[in-house]
Length: 294
Image (cartoon, rainbow, N blue to C red; front, side, top):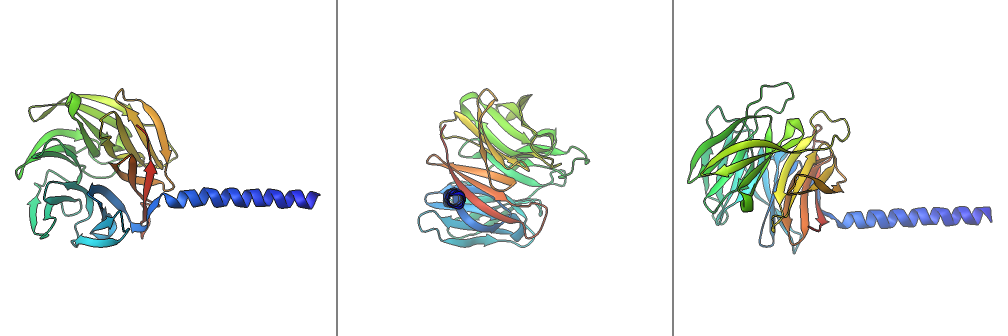
């Protein structure tokens, strides 16, 4: 009888593990990639970067086929922004933005002035204007030198300085507010956006302290289509948070990898790029697809 009970117990454990890992595997959209970031969706295609490989890749969400879309040695791509006919990439290591035509792949390069260091993430304001962060040095002991900038018809203007490694950025059109990840302070800050300026800096949310990673902090963030919720990837914490417009976390999603880097949202799903170990080569990563509610 004892042996039978042991057998039943082992079977239940095996069955539970099978179901658990089976369900988890269904949420893995891309099983092998290297330091993925910056996912954006156009039609049935998901574009994402591989920072450590200097690549932009394209995944067809229907066929699941992955192909290399673009590559540039030394770029260090951090994120992507879609305009009508082009894809912008922030070349973090080269300190420039590159505009790539989606069909011809013709490039237009925008070199940044020396005071702007480390172009990182993008946030759409309108059809012709986007904001982007220049993060500065990713070091807790370094001088605070991060900035938020605007891009309009090829002209770059700095809107706000002295942010401790600004990373993700998103615009809430309904209230003309811009939310910025102040990564190295593990918090989100907000600004009023008015006539091309950023004013009234406030702390929007202090994120929970999870684990012991010294570089824990908010990375990419996106508003839902209805602008009712903000989704935030916490680098070093292995979580994505759903945040209300009141600046309070109302749900968290555990990610299998410790370093979620960014998010895209489409049809009630989160597409989350994440690295297993952001400090060790080959910087193995995955892209997760997670069902959400708003």
